[in-house]
Length: 552
Image (cartoon, rainbow, N blue to C red; front, side):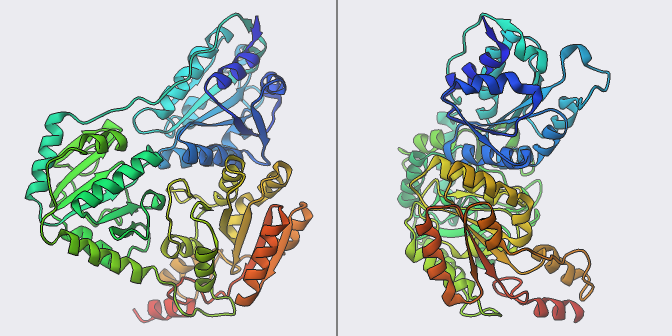
């Protein structure tokens, strides 16, 4: 006989879980006790939102569900930010939440929450394990559900008395994601559409990718000389130095790439959905008829035709689709290669850092040096803010598994994600980019990095404001600054206070030695980069944005 807590841990072990992230709570003490005797590592976060983001980032980098453990009530509501990332980013996540005893339900007991109502709109499945003998069944279903179709989060509530109840049941076998594949008739129709096309284009994104399917993608694109674009924050899916790479369809899109999408007569959307950001606020294509031939391949049937009516829809994973089209008897037409070459040249021009921005720190030079200095397997993480443009536009991703960034645009994501990445890949460089506002959302997780020996390097780009909001504020209400100023600490001293390494960079020339010292320290490190507030974006100053708005 085993307790419910022991059965939970045994079930996680059967799923191949090596690491869980969480904040302890009395509601699931029996699980914590069972973890004491388990090979599963418990990473103790400082806040449940950070723990959920760590688990989500691990899932992004591994393809298997990340696991987060939080206590009831406030613990669960704190975790909601990470759950929302998993929902919008299509990431498999299993969140185990402590719950009140079963006999107290409905009495508004201490920290009682109805999790179905709280998380129902964000999760693929929300349930409560009401008896210990159902633990294997429920954990197995949670993992299957999180990975199936369009991946996403699952929440399981664990009543305190269920975890101390005993049962004699065996753990279920490891869950594997179910593949969906196109039919031969669909592949034939796809071939016919390709044969008719004069200006085809391939747009890739989503979450059900592997290193093997990314390699197959490159081979497929090369066979047909297709220009390849990636969706927002899915840049690691195609080598940026490959001659077929056309850029990313995200915030602040290259106007020439937007024109390329509009001009295409066959748009192949593989693995992702054309949601608000890649569709440029739903302006790139008409709704519901996109005005061109669109082939939409996605593992979730509910995504096909949700916004745009496709000419051809296929419920399939990227790997299954690429395997099915490998033998397709279609060749590139004259002009396809030249079109792709022009698209890549436009990307290269767009992704060249500016020569100068206001102030003594030239971020363009820093980005160029990092690209030269770091190995291609270095992992970049970030949250949200104008500073992220320096990565998305100017860093050239070369390999799969090197990016963890929130498609949903959540602030505070970069540091928790970097910690998860470093714990998963101890020998690789892991860089977190964060704005001063973004960092302070989850900056306390630097203590988690120190405690776990996760030697991440955090670049805090400090301009003393919530920069993105200030940019919009200056556009809409020029000169009327309200609610966007920040008074910041000494971030390098903050790092040292936690037992990490801290550096301050106030001029461009200070960056390289500061970075090398941080890397050589072997400690989690923060490099505090003081950026001129005028350098609001890589290409426009604060004054220019304000002047343009006032001149309307």
